[in-house]
Length: 441
Image 1: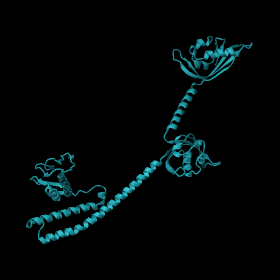
Image 2: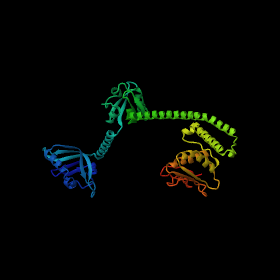
Image 3: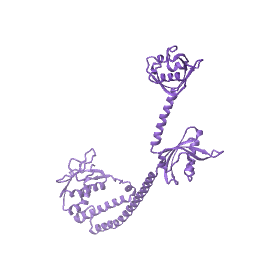
Image 4: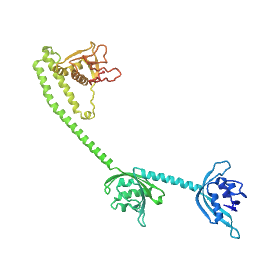
């Protein structure tokens, strides 16, 4: 507070709060313009002049004022509530002005920060993709049992996710009279206990699935709950379709497994008489398995048929092992076996196909005996498949196992060199025509 005298507004008295506001200055006996030159252009001189001239009081609220509160420092913006009141002498003439001001700068800053926070909240509130609302629990008269919730505010996305319009200000039961009571009970538990919940539920009333996050906000006594809503009907439908597809695939896989098992049993049935027939033929011809020299052609043919029947038995046994087939894994029956016997079995299997196509097959084996720790049937299958495929490219094929390279095998066509040459690094090489396998022993 300050008292100014005369039309030049000379300081007659100031209190401590006024000094605190404008800073320590030599004020008494000096004019406002001398003490506060930084007020020039801010309109305060003119207001004082008007009050002195008219005698009318001036009241201002949250008026911005730039003050140099310390010598040599830059001006500082403050906000004040200001009252200018004319002072009169005994004749009724104005002879001074009583200046009363309250510094509201801190309150103004707090209001500005609050307004900015509210603006950010409102922007988030309106721009978020989920439906958001605040509801307050209402209790029955004389009872704490929850009966309904008042909808305090909602964003625009609530309508998109729920289909409900005009929700603000209404209660849940006013908005949706047939609302399932379990929804009210769940939200009430959050309001009463403060325990946040997250749930997904289907609303018959809205005919859609909703995902809900509920969290109590503010004081316990207000029992206000924030709700975050998302329509997840499309996601639930997709999940159901995926479950149906998975069930369908599982059923298809089960039927496939049953079919393979049945097929294996059916294929095994004729093998028994074939095996018996081969034994009878060997007995009738008097050829021993260990001495086919009596009739080389018949003995060789019987040996070949017995080997092929044995291979068929092994393949059918694989079909019967449903677990291995369903898992895509076949057990390797490893044993010590000579490479020559594996090559002979593969050539024996592929020879009819090669001859039928009019191709020539040349086999060159190393002089030393190569002994492998491998599954002979699987290796024979690999070589037989390659022999069956290789003639598709050229008219002549060569199966070659170079001497001195017991850990390497080549299969090549004479002109196009479709080959398998895996090095010791266990890497695979694929030919241009797609014939490839691992043949490192």
